[in-house]
Length: 345
Image (cartoon, rainbow, N blue to C red; front, side):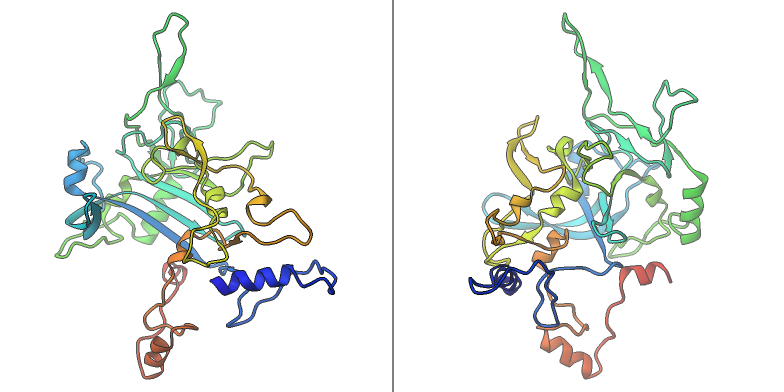
C-alpha cells in the first residue's frame, strides 16, 4: 500500500525537465497505482450485541420480532486489557454496500425494535415497508417515517426531537414479500444447533427494516445527503453520510502502518458532543496540494475502509501470498466464490 502511494506521487511529479501530462496512470499486476474494486464487489458490515449486554440496556427479544442470533466471542475492554465475551449475540444492525455504480450504493438496516431507530433524520424506504406515521393524507407518499418530536413546554414553545423511543415497523409491500419468499429468506424454521449460526430461512430476518439508502453526495438542489445508523453511527447520526465518510477512506505516505491521512470525523462537535462526521461533496484539498503539479496527500481506497485491514485469503491465488498459492497448486481448496455469485445461484 505504501508503494501505491509512492507510484502515484512519482507520476504526479515527473520532474522539472518533463512536461506535466494530464493522463490517468495505468497500473499493472504487481505495480498497482490505485485501488479500484470490480463492479461485482459487495461490502457487508454487521453490528452484534451480546445477549447479556442487550438485556442490561433494556432491549428485549420480542417473540413477534426476534433477533437473528449467533454464538460468538466479542471483544470488550475493561480499560486494563482486552477481554472476550463468549455467548449468544443479537444482530442489531447491518450495512450492505455494492459497487453497481462507481461511487457505490449504500444501504443500512436496523432491527425494528432498536430505540431511536428513526431519530433525527427519519427512516426512508420507498419499496419495502410503508410509513405508519399518523396523519398521512392520501395524496402524500408513504416512504418516509418522520423522527418523533414533542413540545418543549417553554413559554415560547416549539417542537424538539423526542429521542430513544421505538418506531412502528410499517406494512410490508407485496413486492418485498415475493423477493424474500423467492430467495427463501425468513420463510422457514429458526436457526438451531450448537454452535448457533444464522440461516437464511430464519423468520427473524423479517424483524429488520431499511433505514435508508444513498447514492449521491448531494441532492439535485445541492443539499448534502445524509445516511446513518443509530447503532453504527450512534452519537453522530445527524451528521453522518456513508458515501462521504467512505470517500475519505485512503492511505498516505506510510501506507497502512502510520497515521491515516484522513479520518471518519472532522474537528467539530456534534449536537450531543461527539465529533461530527464529514458529509456533502468531498474537498479536493483532502487528497492533494493545490500547487502545480499537485502533490498527493491521500490516495483513496475506493470507498473501502476495510481495505486497510486486508489480508491473504486461504485457498486463493493472490500476489504476495506465495504460501497460499503453492497450497492451491498442490491440490488445495478451490478459490472462494464472490458473494454475488452465491446470491445469484
